[in-house]
Length: 504
Ligand code: ATP
Ligand code: MG
Image (cartoon, rainbow, N blue to C red; front, top):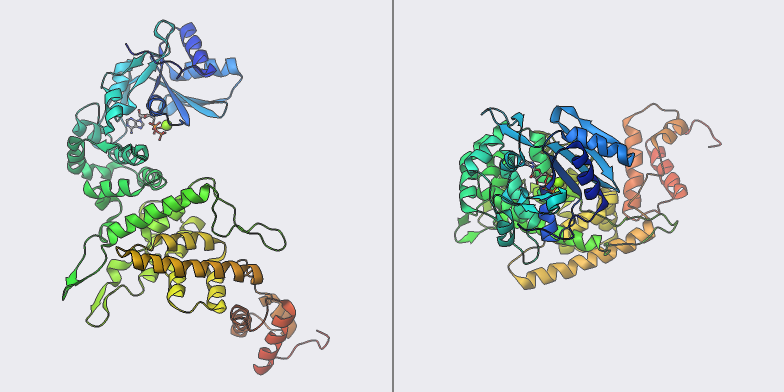
């Protein structure tokens, strides 16, 4: 018997242990917490399994601690928060599945029954909370061995585990992605990968929300490419995001090929993740303040899943726009426009929010070529102002994405682009500090024009506002009401408009 020292020293474990004893039930710590103890990773929640009622045990503990207990009767679970940690209680279960649903028929069971229904051996380990063998590891499927070897394996025949609940296939990918860090690699065993390939059609019984939830968790990992390669290899990606599969492959005409866009996309995604981690450590692109003291960019404290989506989808419009021309070779003209248009459809297909988060992804996909286009052209103040105006507060993320998009096998080319990119970045900082375009608001409003000339909403108003906006962005006038008003009145007079009141 392995008795583990130190992992269960926390007061909460002793309280659970004592309360379970007084109720006459056996309780265990199970799942992610146990796994993360051995991996030396921080765990954000604790799962307790009870041979009896999880809800009753949670309520008894809640009373002792004067803590609120959330009860989910439908699921037979209860949760309480102890010092910021979520502690979840569930009765040990025996599950059987119907073929057409991932909702199991549940019966009360023993710890062993419960361990059998867990997804992976490394997630099926438990620590005893009984006084007589406090801290003993209960590991019937060799989870500790698989953890040491970096292996993801199902406790039962993978065809059974995956067919019962197909979400487990994506979870396998998620754990392979999340637990691989630095030199430690986690791989899915070959028989499990084959089973995933065989059972991929079972994804159909899952709700899109659950799939999207897992995708988001894969995306925020330090190297999300691991997950997307696995999804592709196992054929799961074809069910989840077929548009991404279309990026695969390369074609060649007259000996001229083009970039393999799937692997390029994954490289960009990893680059974004790496840059974001650096960012979180405090290296924001342009961490400066406005003159009036309002901070313009708040350094992130955690990865932004939407920025990762933007990276994943930045080239999604390429297959539809691919052309070969004998003179210029392969082109993907307008792929950013087509790609941006595909974003809402993809979000909808995964039942993801169609709100400002989606708009953000759309915007980044649409603008992802702009900073690099500046690199290859002359970097004028006017072009930089327009970029700032279009990107607004998302300029830092756009620059991060664009920098991550510089991938080439030719290191000299990469170095040159990076150098030019730094010039654009510097210019952005200068122009922004001078002109504060990022939060640009037209100093001339529609209401002002209507009142001044006594006119109803009409095309001329839009034209006048546009004239002012362009003049500011092109640096013809300053971002200032007086100058803007003078220009607007001059243009209005050319249009034949006369102010209704002389004194205004
Ligand atoms: P994380 O650190 O990401 O929360 P976790 O292992 O705690 O990882 P959860 O999704 O919180 O993962 O689930 C807790 C435990 O419940 C898992 O360790 C696993 O034992 C079990 N589990 C969760 N979902 C499933 C599932 N679909 N099928 C089987 N077991 C599952
Ligand atoms: Mg968990």
